Image 1 (cartoon, one colour):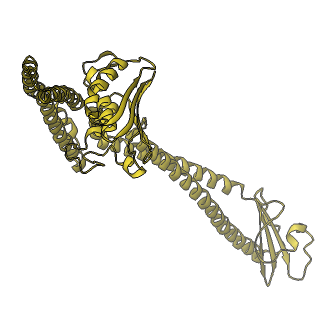
Image 2 (tube, rainbow, N blue to C red; image 1 turned 180 degrees about the vertical axis):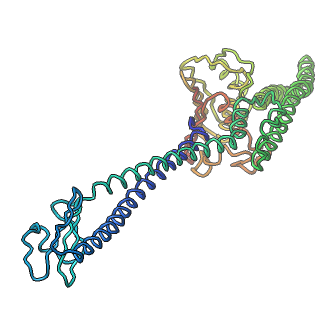
Length: 425
């Protein structure tokens, strides 16, 4: 699964979301605080105005009270009717009230022995002052949060910069030609953090180990290709020399087995060398005829059926051409034929070549579900009495098939034989 999201981008979004959330909280707090501040200022202003009104009334109860666009003041002496007071104020009890029809206006009623005063307040100026102060505070707060978030993001980006550089270096690193100094570069030590330093050391150590593994692989494939083939060649030459001699029937059978074992050894050496190489390293391949290889392996497999009432048949329904090392498909077919011949005592072994697969069908003892589940496990053998088998045949065949994108499928029932299929990609 491809990942396009970078660590720096994720951190940037974290700071953006954090700044937006903080700005919303600050804005809501400022709005709530501005309402409380406005009410507090109005209460204080109304209380001061009421005190001045009482002072004017005490000085001259008959003198008219001053009026303004924001304040309407009324005084009703004790025992008098509030005819000059607006109807919306007459029924109010002493205290501060918010007029229902006009929520922006407040009413204040103060009652003493001298009478009652009514104040009708329109807090326009106070609202404007508090509103603009709140807006200014919100703007400054949001701006401050933005600056702090940006500086925090810049700092975090500097801290994770070595990690991003290490990531780019790992992506560009080629295990087949590692460069150790790239992971030990001083540019990764800019912040001198514990994680970055140890991550660089771990990557450098891994690079060294990978280089050692690659060297061992190259040395093994080079040495094995020469050293293992030399004795096999000697055995083959010795067999060719023996074929010129007059041998008994028993010697002829032994010579045939010797040649068969030599051919198997050469094929296995090629197969192991293919598996020993890294998948990115190309192998020598060519277009080969599957039908031709199947005929060759079937001819060699007839020796495994010596003494058994088993008929080996090849059905060349098609002749597919595949691009692979010739011995690879031969090793896979040989291993499937070996198992079919080993576990079939009577009946037939049939090999059919189709356009996209090869099927090996036998009438042997078959396998149950538990045996099929472990058939490809290394060193596992269904027949423990056969000490010549090492339990690596199907495992090797499967690994070779996976190396070239093929599949090996098994279908079997106890007592009804087994169908092994090599499906090409």
